[in-house]
Length: 219
Image (cartoon, rainbow, N blue to C red; front, side, top):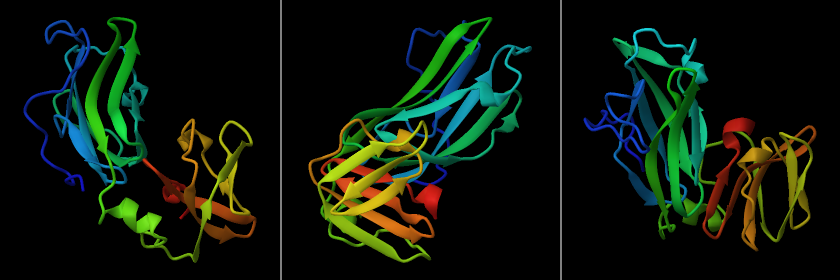
């Protein structure tokens, strides 16, 4: 499991053609890099040090935080923790085996595009980890709702810019955010879902090399 609220490392991880003197901002993460099995959950801090006294960005919300190979499940509001030094904590779940990243970027009229990247390598599932628990048929998280599960071939239908549904072994469950779905799923998956007044809602999809959570939206 990723260490929770680890103190920021001293050295900033900054990838791209940025120099410490020319960049309008510098970025640092609470890890130099991450290597952990698929399904691992934890929190990562991002800090932004603004070096221009008069920043043209009116809000810290103009910075974009994104992930590849990981899911961003939540985050704290930006907090100024020093002079022009801002911090946010990102909840992440490692969702797809292979190379990934967590990035922060911005575009401003003075400096153009800048980004900071935290390298992430998502390892194969372990025999006693959260992926293995889920694949064996046990929902790996606490839940007040009754949880159902099925395993089989999956059919995904996009139903709009935000929503979709997935059908596995005759169970059709709504997916509350289609952007969380990968381009391709394994041939066989296990679906966990909860019942609602409008029908089943997807909570977790697990299969070879993938672990995709929706519980942060549905529970």
